[in-house]
Length: 282
Image (cartoon, rainbow, N blue to C red; front, side, top):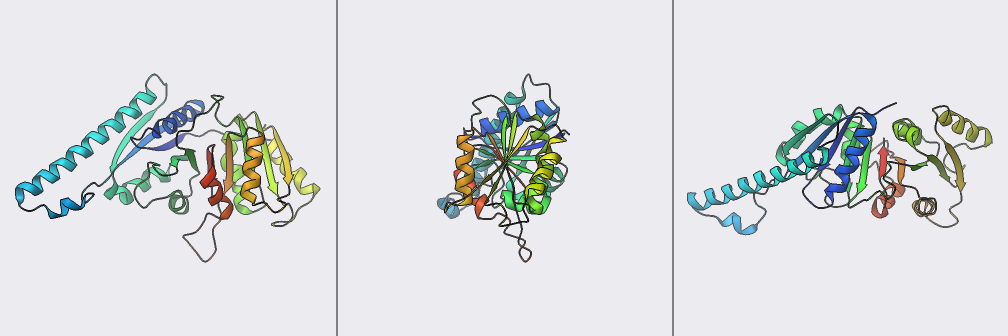
C-alpha cells in the first residue's frame, strides 16, 4: 500500500523548509509524485496608506510594487522547492496560484491526491481563510500537519506511530488512511483513553483490532489508558513524549447537523501543543 500523489503547501518563511524536506522524504520513500503549491498572497490593500493613492501615476506605482513583490516571492518559493527536490529521483511539479484564484484552481489538484501536507500553526502555506478543516470536509483527503520548524531527530518518517482509537467510524477510517505509514513504521501504538466510554469494549474486540492491523505486517501494540481527571489530549501527548512518538494519527469527527465543525476538543488541543507531525483523517 503506497502513496502515489502528494501535495505540499509551501511558503517563503524559514518554517517552510522542514515541511518541504519532510514531504520530499515521504515522496521518495513511496516513489510518489510530489506537487508543490505556493499561494501567492493578494497584497493589494495590505497597507492602509495605499487606499489613499490618488491619480493614475500613484495608482500605477502601487500596482507595480505589488506585482513586483508577487513576482519576487513566487520566484523565491519556486527556488526553495527546486532546491529541495534537486538530486532527488522523484517526479515533481510546482504550481503558483494566486490567493484570489484558490477556490477555483485548487480543488482539481487536491481531489486527486493521496496526501496533503501543510504547516501548523500560523504560516502554513494555505490560502487565506482556508484551513485543514475546510479541506478535509470538502475533499476528504488525509491531511498531514507538520509543526513549523519540525526536525526529525532520527531522520526517519513515522518510525514510532501513535494511533488514537475510540471505536468510532473516524478512528476506523484513520487505520486505513494511515496504513502506508504504519506498514513502514518500526512500531505502532494504538492508544485508547478511558476504554468503554465511547464504544463497546472488550478483550475480544481488542484482539480483533490488533489482528486486523497486524495482518498488514504492522508491528502493533494496544495501550488502554485512564485519564484520571486529565484531558484526553493531555494523556495522548504525555504518552507520545514518554514513548518517543514521532507521528500521531487521529480521526476527525463531524457533527451531523453541522458542515463546519469537524475537529473535536481532543484534536484542537493537540493542534495547539503538537510537537510531532499529525495526520488527520475524516
